[in-house]
Amino acid sequence: MALIQVLQGNTIPDPVVSAKTGVVMRTRPVYVPLKWVIIGKILKALGLAIAWAFTRWRLTGPAAILGYLYLQFDWPGPVIAVVTTSAALVAWWRLHRETYLRFFALPILARWRRRQLLKVWPAAMVAAGLDLSFRGEQVVPILRKVVCRPGVDLLTVRMVTGQIPADYAGETAERLAYTFGVRSVVPAPGRKSMDVMLTLLRGDPLAYTVKPLPITATPDFTRLPLALREDGSLWHLKLFGNQVLIVGATGSGKGSVLWSILRALAGGIASGLVKVKAFDPKGGMELAAGAPLFDEFLCDDYDAMADALEAGVKEMRARAVRLRGRTRQHTPTLDEPLYVFLIDELAALTAYCPDRKTKERIVTNLAILLTQGRAVGMHVIAAVQDPRKEAAANRDLFTIRIALRLAEDGHVDLVLGDGARDRGALADRIPESLPGVAYVAVDGSRHLERVRFSYLDDRAVTAMAGTYGRLGVIDGEIIPGDPDDQSEPS
Image (tube, rainbow, N blue to C red; front, side, top):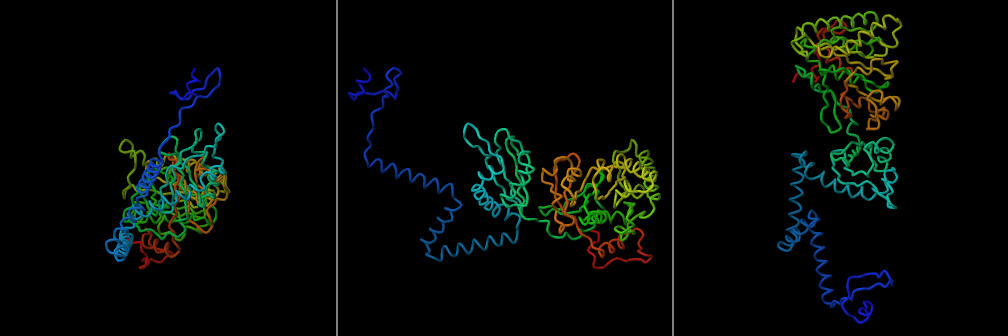
């Protein structure tokens, strides 16, 4: 009966397939007059045009203003507007570059970079092995947001279900870096659980030598300025509560780190708040130029070095008795100065010392200072070339570790901690042309920073030693200091 009704043109229900006959019953076609079809198309096109204009207001807004000015004032109107706007932007850039970049240039650059990345995004995800096949469909991570900063792009990426941020590290990060044409890609967890933050490092803001930093009359031992970060800001060393290990191959710039630290402490050395005991078992080749800065300088006699460390342990224990119950962190004074044990080549003391008993004394006393000296103002700053246990037996007792250029990729995790290289610390790939560039790791934090330490040439070291040295002499002559040296207390 229903089929007869269909054939007769009676009212037809919604499309149904008969289970018995298999006949498909369709609704009667609706005929719309042509003029209404044309009107509907025009209204749809007009709505899409309006939506396009509103979504691209950064383009359509200025175009509308220029068009209005042209209609009102002919060509002088838009020309004057363009010239005035350009002059205002140039003035903004010259007078306050930070806000110009933050609110104008970088947001525009981010939108452009996002469009460029989207062109290669699916292919890049597949090539890096980050895609997933689900029910016959290919699924790739979603690029949600791009934020540009000077020299750095921050990509917020929605991961495919089942992925973790570690999937974007290691070899995958290297593939992405080559695909996107950047120096390196560093992954990190995003703000949301399914997001990963990819940091694209473009160029190298640390390619230029860092000049010696100003010296303060009274050092802030919680914020000693030593180096520049990639964003151009100063990197500070928190000496209180920490022991510092510096690792780098020959020519990597270990001297830059040591002299930067001494420069930051120079005001305290001159006033007596800081006493530096320097150990240079390579015959004094590196540290001899700064001899006036040191309370004690040892470079030849291993027994004397062992005695100095043993005396330091005795002073540490006596100070602990004096401070017991009064404070948990020593505050330097003229009567109770801060001690720094500065060692240029740690392996020469702990691994290559020719006398076994002397070496045992050195290793034992050094370990005691590393584990117990921080709270009472006894700090060890040591540099070494080889980070392996045979050369740096007490490596894990240092709370701040600085990795300059390293000889092997396996050394990166030895110095900075497990997984450091996968998190972007490519210390084995630092070029020989960039001495003083390093990655820094602090105990208790997975964050790694790439910095470049200031460089002091021989002339700057001599001037600093003569001006701030407690001994005030070099080779028996009084050195008044270089009048051109920019190291006056600030």
